[in-house]
Structures are given as structure tokens and as C-alpha cells.
Image 1 (cartoon, rainbow, N blue to C red):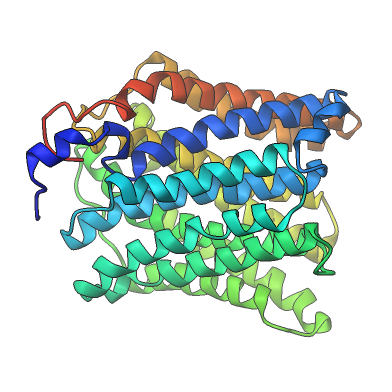
Image 2: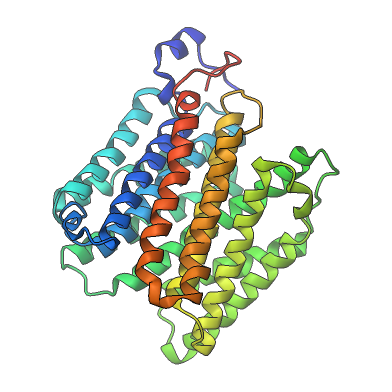
Length: 400
């Protein structure tokens, strides 16, 4: 790997030495603020809607998908590309510019009203990050990782659709656009999870390597890609009403078969691993529940969706950023009691937003604000524990 001049590295603020640092910390802190506002709204403090782009439903959906999850994805990919290619990841002023654009958009969309200015600011940072992701991949001709770039551009297009809806430029249901964004994010999470969970499990449990079976890997990923394509192609409703839920079931089944080979029980004694497995299982369950809702009408779309988002995507994010932040700062891959509490708290938040709501739908409002508070608590703990980790130089003195 090309190592930057150490003197130049030392002049950089540690927070801008690799993309995972500002984006993991900034996105996590932002999610705490976002969930506290969301909880306050459902707890009866309706005046907070004035801080939520004057549309709490739009704001919550948009900011958790793009403001929070999008930032985590970008932080992870711009860091991982250094490992993939051997080229130093983006850092310093260039990284600060991308993060600054993200932050400006978050502040504007929190305190402002729908406006072209905030739309433009929010549509710049992600494609710019995609460019810096694509360059080293193309230089090293690692085309197997290039697919992340068009996915980032697709998320940008969906982000533009969100803003067009808020500005009354586009007459599309918010629910349909957000659902496509969730599927794209789920695809990214399933791809990344499928790559790292077997490796992390093998290393973390000090067991035999988990081998990959080609037909099973392809059998899991192909229908996942088809789900995204199905959601954006103009397929007649009469066909889609059956083909889409069947594709959901096929995807869930293949990922379950893949998951069953990952020795989940062996991770129960390794706190840094078990949440990864729980998150992957929530993703499978969420896909299954979405199929059941569409095929039979039993259950609630919102519950299935939040099983996928809070349980699958949210838990995967917390587990990943906890481990990646330790590994990329040269620290021992172990967490303390506070992070164990954070992991359990986020699982309880998921169960509150899904199982509790399913069993006691008459207490739906309570489930909304309570799950929001639990999410905020889990990520507050992460911010508290990892602030010194993400804002200090690597403990081994290496760049990054």
C-alpha cells in the first residue's frame, strides 16, 4: 500500500484521516437528534414539526434513509476501497468538503423549509463520494467492486425524487419512492454483510474458515438484485402483485440458507459478532414479512418494513461501525459493557417497533416514541464510547 508521508499525515486532524471517522460519528450523532425529535413528535410535542422540513413523515423517512444510512454507507465504502485497491483512501480537505456538504444539507433540512438550495446541497455530497470511490477501483481494474458506484447514483436519483416530492414537482407517493430506497440500501447491506460476516465470524471465534458455495452465493444475490430491478421497472400491477412477493420469498429463503452456514451459535460468546448475525436474520425476516403482507394481507406493512430497517439495517450499522472503528484505529477488537448495553437496547427498540406493535396495536403511538428513544439511547452510547476513538490518531501510529 502507498503510505502517505507521515509528517503530512500528522498535520491532518485525526477526524479527517479516513472517511469512516467523520461519517460514522456525524451520522450516529445526527440519528440521535433525529430520533429524539421523532419521539417528541409522537409523544405529543407537535411543535417540533417546524424543525422537520415542515413535514415530519417526509423528514423522518428521508433523513434516516439518506442523512443517516447514506452517510454510514459512504463512510464505509470510502474506507473499504483502500483495503480493496491498496490506494490510500480519500482524506484531508477533500474528505472535509464531502462531509461539510452532508452536514450543511442536514442542518438546512432540519431547520429550513423545502427549497431548491437545500435540494442542491443534498444532491452533491453523495455523487462526489461516488467519484472518489470509482477512481481507485478503475485504476486497479477491480470491476467486481464497481457496482457500488451505480448504486450510489441510484440512491442520489431517489434522493432527488424525495426533494421533488417535497417541492411539489413530482406527483409520486412518498411510500413508493422510500420503498425503492430501502430495497437499494438492503441490497448494499446484504452484499457487504455476506462478505464480512463469515470472515468476522471465523476470525472472532478462532474457528475454521467458513467456505463459500458458489451456487448458494449467487442464488442469494441474484434475486436480491432482481428485487431492486423489479421495483424500478414499469411492470404491470396485475403481474407485479404476484411476482414481487414471490421474489421476496425467494430472496429471503436463499439468504436463510446462506445464513445457516455461518455458525451463529458460536458468536453468542463474542459480543462484537452476535449483533451482526441478529441483524442479518432481521433482514431475512423483514423480507419474508413483506411478502406475507403482500400475498395475504395479514400483518402490517409498517411492521414488516421496520423489521427490515430498524432490525436489519439499523442493527447491522451499529454492529459494523463498532467493529470497523476499532479495527481501523489499530485497537483490540473487543467492546466493553456500555456497548453491550447499546447492542441489546437497539434489539429491544426493534422488538418494540415490531412485536410490541403487532401484539398491542392500540398502543401504536407509545411504540413509536419508545422505540425512537431506545434507538437514540443505543447510538448515544456509541457516540460517547467512540468519540475518543474516532477523533484520535491510530494507537499504532500508522496512517488512517
